[in-house]
Picture 1 (cartoon, one colour):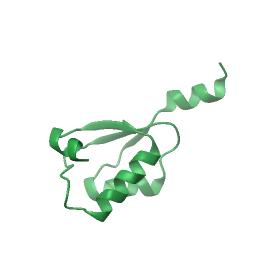
Picture 2: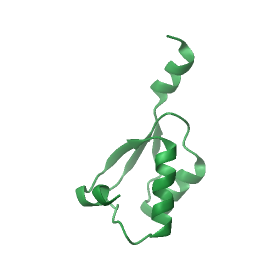
Picture 3: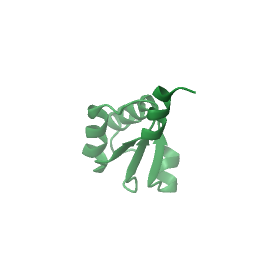
Picture 4: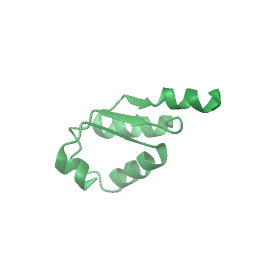
Length: 79
């Protein structure tokens, strides 16, 4: 989170488990990091929980969390 704030990241990616941990840290110390530059999250590996999306929207007005649809389709398509 320190690096995201320092570098003023606007788009980043990760799995829901990571973003849930990030959200917990933000909720524990809401004024510690300035992530106001962050505009979009790319979520891969599994669906983003609605509570997670709502949390990021609450703190940073990030209403768009994009799921890696291509990866999800490949999982069920076989080798």
